[in-house]
Length: 128
Length: 89
Image (cartoon, rainbow over all chains, first blue to last red; front, side, top):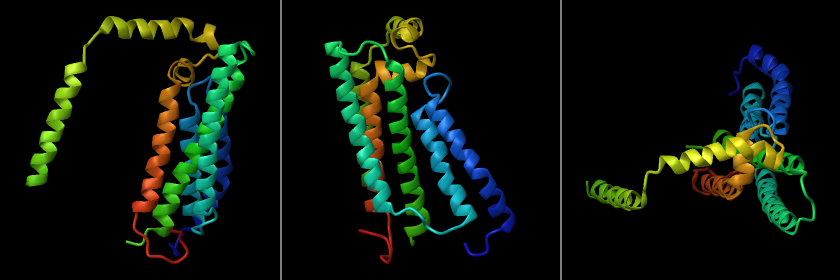
């Protein structure tokens, strides 16, 4: 896509910090307002499409993104186990909000990584 | 043609199995919904009931959904066609 529009790339360059902030807002306020990890992650994943339209050069390596995704999933599982233990033994009572925000953040990061992998893969590496 | 027949038979079997164990119980579903709506904020302190359902009442669903997403992404990476070059694998 070498003949990309200057107008489009300039306007997207202005817009995509706003998309990022909106995605983070959706993730961090998932327990209060409609939204959550999956939705916010998908919004952050949309940045990759915007980035491709503005400036079609791959800037995230697939391997790195995949490692981050796997690590996030592992941390999510550990967090779930930890939460189970803590609530069963009643070490910490209450403080669900921290757990909800942490889970939403991890899920959001994971979904964002997944979406960017799919977009990157199909846009830059798929040659058929 | 043969594959279509096999697919049809498989879908039929799946339908039969699913319908065998499906017992429609609107009262139970209603009970679950009203329980979540009544107790979500009291149990966790979060105002968004959907978040409470998917991160507290149905947390296993969320964990395995995340796992499913990761498996599908791994499948995309390994199955999608690439012409070598800078991409890995």
